[in-house]
Amino acid sequence: MKARLTVLGSGTSMGVPTIGCDCAVCHSTDPHDRRTRPSILIEYGDHVVMIDSTPDFREQAIREQIRTIDAVLYTHTHADHILGIDDLRPLSFRHKPNKLPLYASQEAVDFIRSMFRYIFDADYKFGGLPLVELRVINGPVDLFGARFEPVTVIHGEAEIYGFRFGSAAYLTDHSEIPEASLAKLQGLDILFLDALRHKPHPTHSTVENSLQIVERLKPKRAFFTHICHDLPHEATNASLPPNVRLSFDGMKLGFEI
Ligand SMILES: [Zn+2]
Ligand SMILES: [Zn+2]
Ligand SMILES: [Zn+2]
Image 1 (tube, rainbow, N blue to C red):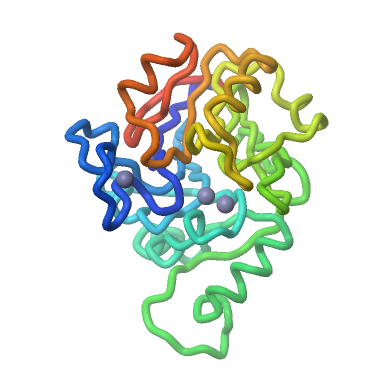
Image 2 (spheres, rainbow, N blue to C red):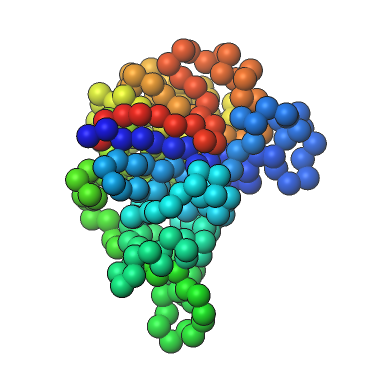
């Protein structure tokens, strides 16, 4: 089935420009250097699935004119990946009398439930709550005729999820990819990888490290995400192999799901 992937956000946790920063990338006039927090949208058939809901979700949804979301999959519970949950409100109301399903690991479900207690705690009276329900990921998730397979990656000291869906995979936030997960990433058309910057970081991949993963997995096309202000879009792309590009907010790609 034909599918379309939209990059909602390509930036690291603080976004680019970073508040209070005077560096060249934070002051760049190239719109590709403006990076909101990391998330993607996948559209196929009549359905729309999002991966992560960032603090920039509202801005992203308005920019991309998102009219509906049928499910959200979560990679992990760092603030830059979950803080948009409250802004799911207007789209969640369209699911009445049902709720918009949010899929995450058991650990992530427990964390989201306690962090957003006002949403999930029935005794906590509050107006205008998002109509969402948490569902635990126990293996591949079948959504509207497509399969989303969780792929475990190492993010510093935590094990979190990336996802493979059809001929594409989205791995944000990883410092290491275990062998068993690399085996699930063969034969890809599109591979998204974390590439924070050049300098090593304890919980994120670098451009150099992710280029080695591309070399090993040989996807047709690779795109880097979770990018910080160390990487100017145009100059960095000019230094990359032709099948590897920095992703950017609003980038759209076709693939088979
Ligand atoms: Zn992150
Ligand atoms: Zn900066
Ligand atoms: Zn993270």
